[in-house]
Length: 157
Image (tube, rainbow, N blue to C red):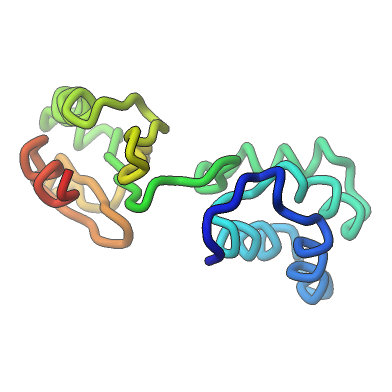
């Protein structure tokens, strides 16, 4: 991933160079969006017209796909991404209260990033760890039976 650059500094030619080799894939839009997000940490607005042009789609169609999938971001995330499960099993085991207290401790709301850019908090709907609810994920690591104290400690916040 490139260093975080302001979205306005991302050259559409760089986006085109990155995604054009993927145009021959079956259903190329999702691989292109993943490649862009992997490269810049988010899908900048400058990517929409480039993708629409390459794939002969309307800009609204590209935006519709980006907004449908929760994992695509329109701005860079923090250095760590904390995903807190909001599904039924976690709710039944106190997940709502745990999430609310964690958000207060971090000083952010859902989809927010701490002022120092260290942590972005996102909701997720089932991590497949229902037997160990409430669950959360830091980066690629799933954690069960979480508490606000444990999450803050694991994040180093």
